[in-house]
Image 1 (tube, rainbow, N blue to C red):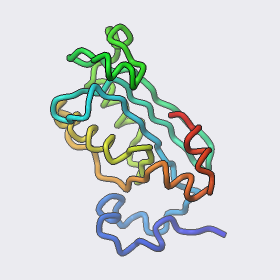
Image 2 (image 1 turned 90 degrees about the horizontal axis):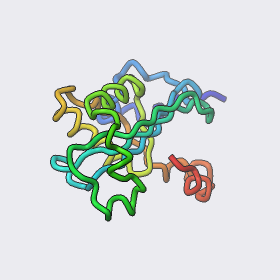
Image 3 (image 1 turned 120 degrees about the vertical axis):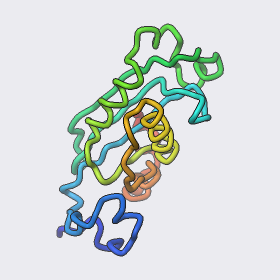
Image 4 (image 1 turned 180 degrees about the horizontal axis):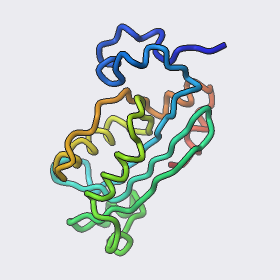
Length: 165
C-alpha cells in the first residue's frame, strides 16, 4: 500500500512553506532522506564554528550516498570540545574551508524536503548562521525529524543509538 508522505499534514503551513504544494502526492518510498550531523567548536552559532560535516542520503532504508568532511575553523578547538568530539586542532589544520564545505553540503542535500538528524534543529540553525556568514544565502527551510523519530517509527531504540553518523 502506498501512502502519501504528507497526506495527514497537507494543511500545515509550516510543511507547505518547507516543501511547497508541489509535493502533495509525494510517496514515502519516493523520498530521499538526508541525515545530517555537525560537530562544532561550541554552542554559540554566531561565534563558534563547524569542525565536521557528515551527511548521508537514504531512500527506502538504503544508503544512497555519503558526504563527510572535516572543516577548518579559524578558532582553536578547546580540549573540552576535543574530549567530546574527538576532533583535534591537528586534524583540521589542513581541512576544507567552511565556504567550500557548506557549498558542497548544500549541493549534496539539494532540494530534499526533509532532514533527519540526532539534534537536527541545532544543526539546521547552525547551518543557517554559517551559510549567511559565508555569503551563501540562507539554508532553505525544511521539515526536520529527530533521529528519535526513526526508532519510534521502527520500535527499535537500540538501532538509533548504535547508528553512528
